[in-house]
Image 1 (cartoon, rainbow, N blue to C red):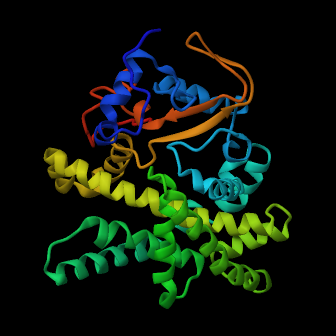
Image 2: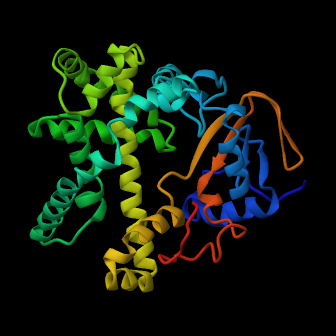
Length: 347
C-alpha cells in the first residue's frame, strides 16, 4: 500500500502533536512497516488486544535478542555504552518471557497488592500536601514538574525501598539520570549508564543487609526472591532500578499530562471539582486513556504472523502504539475528546 506517512517518528512535529501522526497511521496503514527504523508499527485497538492475547507469538526479550542498532540513533563513540545498557535492561523482569516472567512477577506483585497499596495512601496524600504547601510558600508560582511531579514519586519509592530520609537527594539524582532511557538525544546513554552504575553501587549494601535481616520493603521482597532461586543477585539490583525508573517516569508523565489535559479541557475540570469522590476513578482512567504516560512498547515476533494481510517475519521488531489504540474511533466514541464520564473505558 502506498502511503504518505513519514517514517521518522521522532521529528519535532510528531513529538509536538503525536496524535495527528498516530491517526494518520491508523487510517492509512494500521500495520505499517517503518523502513527507517526497521520495525512494524501497530496502531489499532483491536490489533493491540489481539497481540496481548497471543503473547506466545511475541517476545518481551528485545534487549537480549534484538541485534539491531539503537533508535533514535546514538553517538558512534557510545557503542560500548549501548551494549552495557542493553545488557542491564535485559535483566529486568519485564524483559523476560513465560515461564520466567510469571515467576518473577509473582514475587514482585506480592508487594503490590491492592491492600498494601491502600496503606500507602496516607503517605502519598500528606507528601502531596507538603510539597504543594512548600511551593506556595516560596511565592514564585508553582512549577508542577519541579514542585510535585518529580519529587513525589521519588519520595514514595524511596520509602518503598527503605532509603533513609537524609539519602533521598541521592536517589532523586539517580532517578533523573535513569530517566534518560526515554529520551532521544544522541548522548543519552552517558547519563543512563551513570544512573545504572550508581544504582548498583547504592543498592548492593542494602541487598546484602536485607538478605541477613529482611524488612518490610521492596528490596527485601527481591532478596527473598533471590533466596528462593527465582532472581540472581544481578536481577535483584536491576529490578530495584526498574522500580525507581518505571514508578518515577510513569507517575511524572501522568501527573503532568493529566494536569495539562484538564487545563485544556476546563469543562472537565469543573465537572471533577463538582463531584471529586464520584468521578475520581473515571477521571483517572480517562487521563490514562486520553494521554497515556507510556506511549508505546516494543516486542519481537517469536514466529511468522499474518496481520491485516501483512506478513510479519520471525524476529521482526514490532512497536505497539498504545496511545494510538486509546484514540481509536472504532473503539471509543469521540475518541479525541476528553470525557471523564466515559464508562466503561477499556484503554
